[in-house]
Length: 405
Image (cartoon, rainbow, N blue to C red; front, side):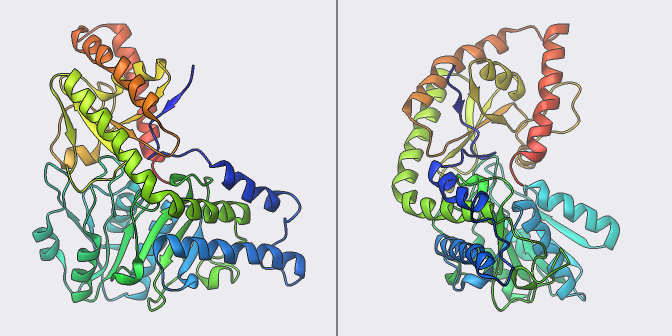
């Protein structure tokens, strides 16, 4: 059975051209990029080239503003912790209620261990940030604002350029988790007041275990990982050269394909949404109807839980994810949909370059019957309860780890 992969916000397939670019660094060009000899210099040149490829994708002014990391989670942590170190007199953080756990879990930890005050800005029923509440939270006590560029569950896009300008008015640093935005939306950092930006390779058809943190050249930075002098003293440790080269090639391909693929993928997403809303009653789309990632749709199917849908879709070879409260036996709802005050079951479908119209048609073929079956099923019953609890546990694990790295 062909797998229909519509969980691309969790991870994407590594592009064959990316694999080809990585192979020499895994075989005959295996030198350490920090070595002084010519063999190591080949690896160093590969890193420099990858830095330039990523610089072009995100519109950084200088290539040395890009620090390679292990992925989005490390980049988020490094940005926030650095800001608190370089501005020790400021003890407040502003973020949103719908950030990725890479940000929210760190903020909760800092509240407990460092007595940092965290302002979690609410969102409305479409997942849009309450800008008035954001303005009210800004003060000279704020060290850093960390607001995601686009939400991983709903695709809602935040006005980060405007938010960064407001943060500058009180002297705060502005960081954005752009893991879901890079490669999907045009980004030109040199025209914004954004100080730091996080991204992850495996969201744009690159390998897992590689990412980057953009740090504007004028921003003081305190390294998270101590050791050698790699990455201009911003991130110690021998670089993951094959992964970084893969990230660079993935960035180059994303820039090359962005315009055409964005339009094509949006048509696929809209076809799926329209088809499901027409075929399945009591169904609606979550997120901002206009300012939303072109590849993402989060759909609520009322009266049932999203994890039941996922289980039956998986049996049909369709991979997607959920963002709703769990069924009995689980402890965590989706914090994103909870913040939006959406109580019902939801499923997220996220597209990428590999998807086509056949994938959409396959979902439209099987999903209406699945929803009808679940809505007609008895509320209780040991088989259904056990199935839902097992699926819920698996879903929680995926949600905790799958949308970042």
